[in-house]
Image (cartoon, rainbow, N blue to C red; front, top):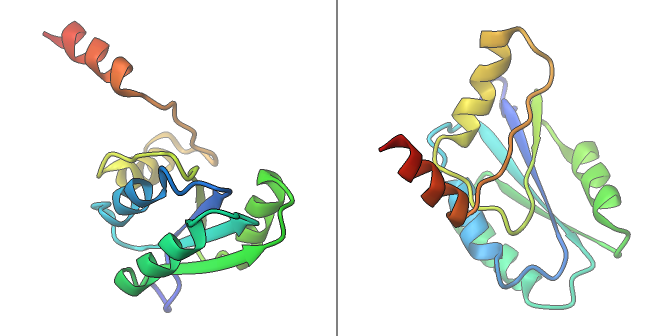
Length: 136
């Protein structure tokens, strides 16, 4: 972190995501790119999402947790933007599973292609199986 500020702020809006949240958080935490913070924005969850987030905070020093009254994904993302300290911002949903090099890849793209915005598609297991068959 440069000047104690992370390079990337990863914002994760959460609403009743207890079924998927822990694998998502683990995949974010396991990134090969290290200079980032994780902002967990709980958008009024009534399940065990808060408990999962608070437990995760004990293991992950880069994570911060924010609770807000339910207002939808846009209001949760906006709270994350207000709290973000990073030079760059990245949004992931609470049911996303990231490959270990996603942040490294996303960070490299603007430098390579001289761009201001990077976006990427998602792949589920079915997509990955099809891709692996095509490469053989």
